[in-house]
Length: 185
Image (cartoon, rainbow, N blue to C red):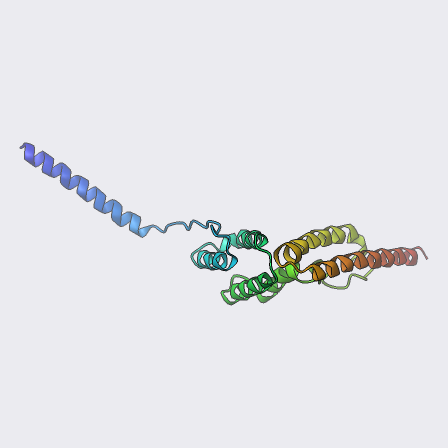
């Protein structure tokens, strides 16, 4: 009788373990979405690409920031190419539209300001929101400093962007002053 109780208990435990194994096999595991652990940009890009293809798409912006941070640890002109290729890959995989990929690249690695899309000489469009345009451009200039100077060591392009920023400030100020004068007439 004792043997029957022990065998029954072992059978019940084994059956419960088997059921638990089947149930856990049916559930999906949540991806870890961890930041890359390497200081090598090319290896980090490969890690990030693997994570993005395995369910971590929602972490794209954090991964992009992680890659920038890693590249800051070993700044060189070739880093621009690595980011360009990563953004092209992101577009090819459907993670970013072509326009989004271009905006990411231009925001960090081009002298052109994305905050100035459209006609910034327009009295009715830009002047009423001039302070916001300035703030957006200042944020973007900070991103250009990070990308052009700290990641790619492209001093010349950063100084061009900084000069463009100052010129745009002057043009906007003059445009909005002229717009105000025309309204007063």
